[in-house]
Length: 114
Length: 113
Image (cartoon, rainbow over all chains, first blue to last red; front, side):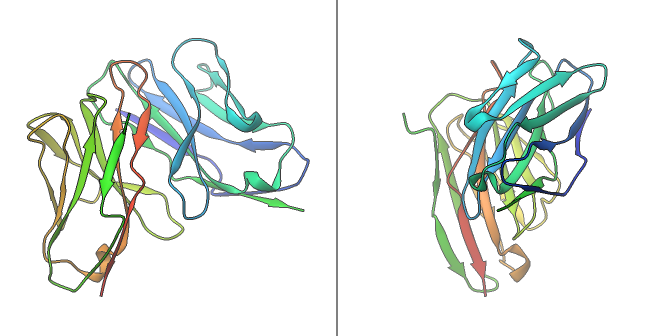
């Protein structure tokens, strides 16, 4: 079985300040982990992915995430928020070696204040 | 490379009507999913399939049916449409063999009046 918990439903930051979106997971297998972003009235776009290579993963638009097995976490960060980062962010866990569907977190809405 | 193709993009239904949302992928992915997303909410899994001939219920299957006769196609059938089924529907396929990355269709906005 696997699950994912996004610890904040809404995060608000000022433009130019750091972003931290938190995600914890559980998985019976070696997981693959993803962050997807959804801008208003748009589809979902892959931000970055962890697939058992380097634990610090760099994605698009300056985002990165660190896989911490001991903490079962995969938090998303960005050093400096931009207005265009305002969107919904979803953390996803998949177990490629298992036979269960991947699992979406409930999402974190990021607001960026000018 | 088309990826995941989902049709129609928009549809208005009357209560009690039926329709099928089409989803096709050309990446030879075994895993496919149907999600619904209500306004301001996250994604809820309706049905999924781990390969041709195999389907299983997700979190919110009531009022829907699926079939998977080929690897490429995974249509979602709505029987007796109800206002509660007004939502945006996303089809996705998963590259389970390699990375588990999801590839999404563009979404279908369905309104039931």
